[in-house]
Length: 174
Image (cartoon, rainbow, N blue to C red):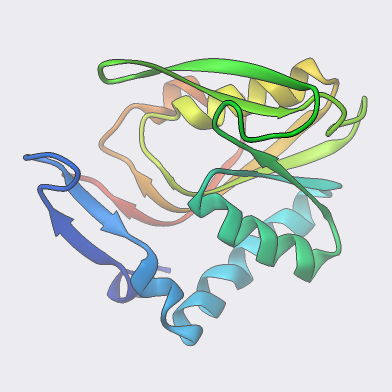
């Protein structure tokens, strides 16, 4: 899947100096590239026997919605605080400087349901770990994680060692 890299734009010094941002909007703008990304993610989710997809705000929604539609699965949004209109559960996670939080509806996952978490990119693993904890608190089972890009030079593997992580593209340096 390394051929997908040609659809990813690299933006140096965004959102701050020294950071190289891998922009998936160029992938989304290319129907061929988008289809090439969705197909292996779809296959991974099928093999895992997932019943629901939890997509992480905001770019994870794009991939999660397309995959849920293709596979006829429920789509559960994991959102920033205050965005969901019903009773929620939340999980805090660490950022480089401080913390952040994600929320899901408290009735989104039923006991024993198999869930795949979908996002566009995995860096430190904090957001995915937070979502996994919420799924498990609701009684669900995380049967996999599927992302387009993995920043393998960052230590996400340690946080997510109990999950099978599927990525399409990896970058091993900033």
